[in-house]
Amino acid sequence: MKVLVINSGSSSIKYQLFEMPQQEVLCSGLIERIGLEIGKVHYKSNNNKVEEEVAIANHKSGLERVVDLLLDKKVGVISSTDEIKVVGHRVVHGGSTFTKTTIVTEEVKKKIESLFSLAPLHNPANLEGITVSESIFKNAQQVAVFDTAFHQTIPVVAYKYAIPNKFLDEHRIRLYGFHGTSHKYVSEKANEYLQKEHSKIITIHLGNGCSITAVENGKSIDHSLGFGPVTGLIMGTRSGDIDHSLIFYLINNLGHDADYINDMLQKESGMLGLTGFSDLRDIEAAAAKGDKNCQLALDMNAYRIKKYIGSYVAAMNGLDAIVFTAGIGENSDVIRRLVCTDMEYLGIELDTEKNAIRAKQFTEIHKETSKVKVLVIPTNEELEIAKQSYELL
Image 1 (cartoon, rainbow, N blue to C red):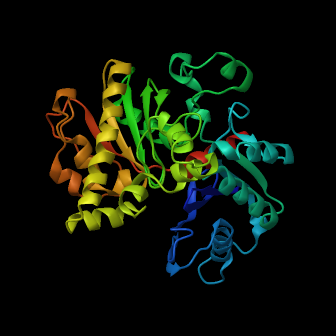
Image 2: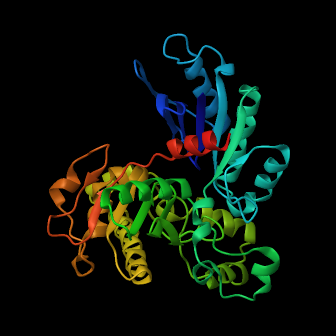
């Protein structure tokens, strides 16, 4: 059975076509820098590779280009869209409604739309991916896999906010957590590596969106993103943690309205607000040339991650391994070095030579003397989504 997985992020689309249940990858690729002046198109099959630089105005244009490549007579891997029986979609926010993988219906789409305000950078793109797929793959079953599902094991002491009880009881306002398919996938790989009956792992997903999870015995017990995907670590365009009194100051003293502040915190903050760049590759290049704002932003980014590592070590009363994953986590030796510097007290010792090696596979980057394993594990959210979609059907 051919299962196409579409992972629509805030500024990118990852995709993979699988033959299931063999988990054979027929093709894979990435559309990145959506909405910027120059976008990038990547496509790879067993026999062909395509790399393009072209403007990608929005997610709809990106998904249409993916389909063109799948059907292309020279590089494509299918002759008809009818060959694809299932399309699995990553959906960021499932609220309290969706706690497991779900077949897409009109009612499901309406509920995903109702959660737009909680994940404004993601749920609209996720739903657009579903809608476009329905129009193209007319005979395929559409399946939604929710980022929030893996974090359903977080205990009430961690997910409940210290606000009046009625907001949880009546409105389900709580910490939900995100990037669940990624954290689930890499934590399972780390557990296979550790081969311990009881494990304590911190998984660090660093991309345009960033999050960190405490995973004890294979289950998520705490997570940096909360009711919506804005809190926690410093991200590409999102602020991460701020003092919420700042919002009221911006409204009452500076005259900004709530819509502006929401857009500012979601789309104009984070690394973009600090440097003028949202892509970490640009920031690292500028910092290397002496840009002080970019270097400070890198230091702030790493400092925030270190604070969360310390808190999760305390929450789990120990640590066996930390895992770096996703685009930045897998590729930025700079961020990994900054995060792991001066962490010997917690048993974290980075091998700088191993860290500098660009590897696209499971890699150890700790010293032999390190009590805590430091791992780079390429995430494969698409495979996780394919597995869950296939198993559901």
